Image (cartoon, rainbow, N blue to C red):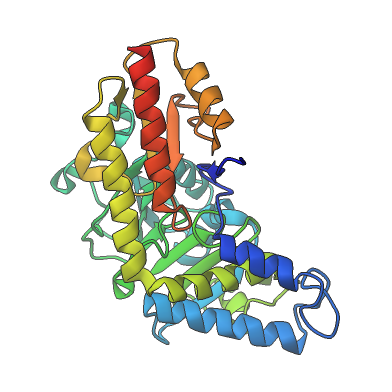
Length: 358
């Protein structure tokens, strides 16, 4: 009897089965006998699909017309430069460092503006965030930057930082996992390969008044304004990743939208954290206040068992549980498309493994 296979990778991550089925069914003929992989981004059929996908995303996140929604290439990493290049005007920017990705973003920002680190969780190995009252904010920052969820360290900031400047957030692993107060953000960006589709697409949601007629010293391909004016088709668009994202947006709407995603994701995380906290063999060191809903790292209290754990887990269909190479241990990434049954099977496996090895 074939085993169920669950992909716990942090990204590229698992896709909804129904989305994969749709891709397969329509791969040969998206329009006029042509595959989605060979049609023009400027074709009427794809432009109609692109417009509908943006409309669905706006509906999911309740994005009003004061925001531009961009479908770009270059990955989230390119946004580490595009954000300061477009919004900072060579001025000062505030960055909160809570893990590897916000730290990398800050290192990129140094090339383009005056960087101020308001707080850095490096000293506690990224398992906690200091009290906002202790942060050292600039008086005239162009924006405040934070990473909503650190996929490597499993640390998530659940409350929007309260600052008096535009808030910029890397939401690569949290966008569309729950409702958000979109109006409190100046700019949000997210690479697609976590909850929104496959690699090759990055979504940017930005207040129009931050970008229109701004950053005119930049070449068009690096200007948000230019991409907005051309409806994200300034150059050849990432048609296939955009198509997959559009199907995922439809899937989320069919599941009941972001309220349904929020309830499911919180339940999945609670199940796994509760098991870890009550086990003898496993542990998670992140401050419970900042534990991630979608990336759950854990280590073992006994040495020498990890390799066997990972191999045995993979043999029974629990794939890609190895922690990031920089931190080790294990990590279960449980994004939107991960069914609750997978969490239950993972917990059952962990319990059996603990019973055998203690």
